[in-house]
Amino acid sequence: SGPSAQHHQQVNTPSRATEFDLRNGDCVEGMRTMEASSVDVIVTSPPYNLDINYRSFEDSAAREEFLDWCDTWSDEVKRVMSEDGSFFLNLGASPKNPFLPHELLLRLREKFELQNTIHWIKSITVEQRDGGEISVGHFKPINSPRFLNDCHEYLFHLTKKGSTKIDRLSIGVPYSDKSNITRWEHTRGNDVRCRGNTWFIPYKTIQHRDSDRPHPATFPVELARRCLALHGKGGETVVLDPFLGIGHAAMAAVEYGAKRCIGFEIDDEYLSIARQQVAEVQGMLF
Image: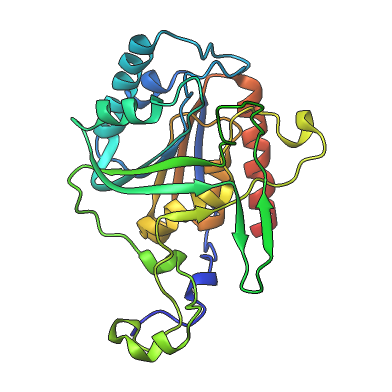
């Protein structure tokens, strides 16, 4: 039978606490200690080479040097990733560095197939049926006569063969036109369809930058949770985030009910925050 009418709203209720291995150290060295083909889903956002002010990482290397480094860590990602695994790579750009996501993706095409390109929308303005407009979400304004405000980032879904099956309806949405439920045979009478590759996930409103967002470049927990749900392995999922930051992928692993989550972070303060946040989420669920 097909998914329930509320399938798109469901979140796995974890039957057990996720096991964690969150380490302070370089991700390349850390991944080299891991078994080959031992990870189901990698969800990560590496430094973007945009001169972001991280605590313990200089994000301003020369372009070729940066891409060579990405070659090194992505070799290890491929090695530890299962044959039918999913690698979700979040990348952003800036007006002074617009080609970066595409340059890195071209480097990775020798290792991976680009199975899906997802657009993470942070802020959007939508015209309503009554003619009005509604603006939702947050973005960092760009004060320039040349550039538009940048309200999205890329989320590249990379796999080894381009044939990894996914659970599209696990993050599905209801039909706006309910007649489609009976019109199309593939619905099996259920009010849920594929969400598509445009995901609106706004940042939470923050009052104090230092306490509410202590890391300068994070993705929302919900972004990572959707990646895990889309891969669809449920409670047997082993998750890896080579660039753990303050632990949003790890928090998503708890919420999703993954079996295990491994993470590497070179900054001890970020790692401490990650461990604290994971413990808080686990405390709410168990």
